[in-house]
Image (cartoon, rainbow, N blue to C red; front, side, top):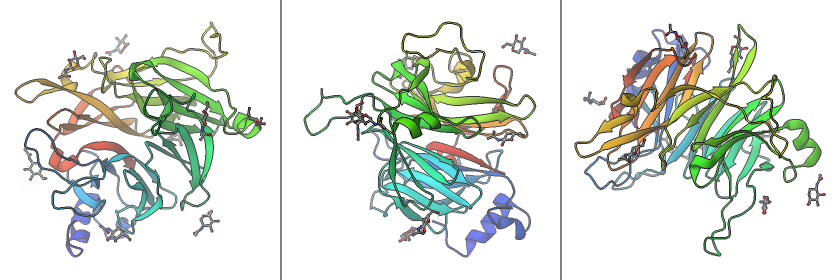
Length: 366
Ligand SMILES: *[C@@H]1O[C@H](CO)[C@@H](O)[C@H](O)[C@H]1NC(C)=O
Ligand SMILES: *[C@@H]1O[C@H](CO)[C@@H](O)[C@H](O)[C@H]1NC(C)=O
Ligand SMILES: *[C@@H]1O[C@H](CO)[C@@H](O)[C@H](O)[C@H]1NC(C)=O
Ligand SMILES: *[C@@H]1O[C@H](CO)[C@@H](O)[C@H](O)[C@H]1NC(C)=O
Ligand SMILES: *[C@@H]1O[C@H](CO)[C@@H](O)[C@H](O)[C@H]1NC(C)=O
Ligand SMILES: *[C@@H]1O[C@H](CO)[C@@H](O)[C@H](O)[C@H]1NC(C)=O
Ligand SMILES: *[C@@H]1O[C@H](CO)[C@@H](O)[C@H](O)[C@H]1NC(C)=O
Ligand SMILES: CC(=O)N[C@H]1CO[C@H](CO)[C@@H](O)[C@@H]1O
């Protein structure tokens, strides 16, 4: 962590040209990154702690805003799996291996507000929603972490094939997005093998009516390759809401991808036997369309990189995504591109892991 006296000066160059704009609500635009940190690798790689970072929207002026967990002699990370920003109240939420941490927009005033390790986060209507991998539950709490309740059980049952002390959920929420306008909660239903995961949703009205345990999920997309973080994004011009999501495909041979789909009518013509409709999403970018983007050689092998997170500024049509490799050597990329998919041009903004960390969450802050 940088010494306090230096911090305002660095922030000044990072975020703004005036002191007034240093306040979270009026700071000039930038990105926040949740870095999961680097533990031991079989190759000599510097270890570092899990952190929250800030950097400009063109990938420069990276600043380590906060390191999480207690310092250890070997800088062991506590791990992180995602990030959410509550712009209204000027708060940042980071899902870490030691619970959900909340800080202000500059990484100050960190508090652990929920002790559980979440794998996905979403904020909607003054509630924090978070997904738990082991139990397959989506829980929600007040933004200060009080009143934790089970919102939806998306486990699709428990897997008894492990040891009696470890009975994980068959499916877990790898990403959560809420469509406030139409009252849907979407989630990445991650199963094993991860290639056979799916994109699902349920209506808030049904959750209300049937309770957290009894809601029948609608399966929207099948054979999704390890889906993760997702967002509902409204296109101002068309008034169309689309779900965007990441497919990491980390342990699989499926391509990593960023996809989107609108699930409004007209529906696909053939309903599935379970009552849902299976849609064909549009691929915005993938390791099939842009192979060079997602491979990096470490001198021995081609390391595959997975998309881990994305964020957008829909007013200007910009999208940023992060990717990482998770074998031996840690690589990471921050890429900027247009929001519009296939024809969008992209730029690798930063691929220096010392700068951007190993990003598992990225948020645009206007
Ligand atoms: C985060 O909060 C904890 C508990 O309040 C505090 O001990 C620690 O110093 C804080 N870390 C930083 C880097 O501010
Ligand atoms: C937490 O937030 C809720 C909802 O805003 C509020 O009612 C409650 O008083 C808060 N509790 C604390 C300890 O701040
Ligand atoms: C969630 O639902 C499954 C059945 O689909 C059940 O086995 C499990 O006990 C439920 N979990 C909780 C915490 O209620
Ligand atoms: C949900 O299902 C359980 C078990 O089948 C049942 O006991 C309970 O009444 C149901 N709740 C609602 C609100 O339908
Ligand atoms: C996107 O743009 C529309 C219209 O400009 C706006 O209403 C909406 O809140 C924006 N943000 C998201 C996340 O869709
Ligand atoms: C990278 O992914 C391809 C499939 O896209 C696979 O054939 C190859 O074995 C992977 N390489 C490594 C080093 O895992
Ligand atoms: C990577 O970033 C670090 C920290 O900003 C810097 O010291 C280093 O020179 C950069 N490395 C490269 C190859 O640009
Ligand atoms: C200008 C341009 O490249 N247009 C292409 C955009 O993408 C669609 C479908 O992916 C193509 O059909 C266009 O030719």
